Length: 173
Image 1 (spheres, rainbow, N blue to C red):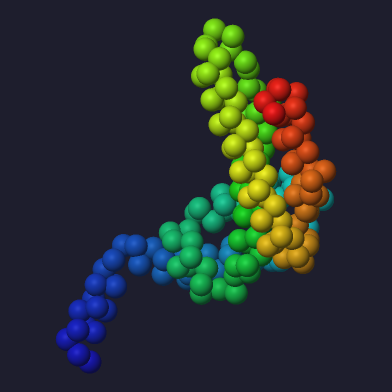
Image 2 (cartoon, rainbow, N blue to C red):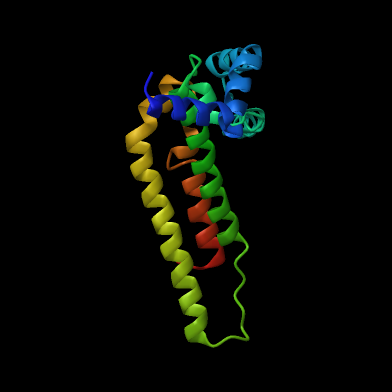
């Protein structure tokens, strides 16, 4: 054994972070295997179920010392878990945009130019969000369907429609 590998081994054995990862691997196997089973078998009725599951999963995984370092020692369904989280993040992002637009109030006390700038920023933000969703939809629709993740919210009749209606109602367009 070389001096270098001996030093590396000693450092690894003393690192509290690495020791915590090792402890998780050795003691939380049943817990992680239960999570794996739930990720693989879960199905969703609507996007709200995806949000709930993603939040729950993140909460469960937060108990690990280092999520990726621990899970790589198991047959973790990384792709499905990532797709679930991605769908939740994207939906929340659009929901925030919809809420921002629907809560817009025209303030008559500010100059017209400033009000128009605010409206233009909001319109650009909404167009950017819709364009991003369109690209996402083209890239992931099949994958979401394969993993049984609801996609109706991604359609033009889903949240995009709500964003556009909010824009129309607020008179931003």
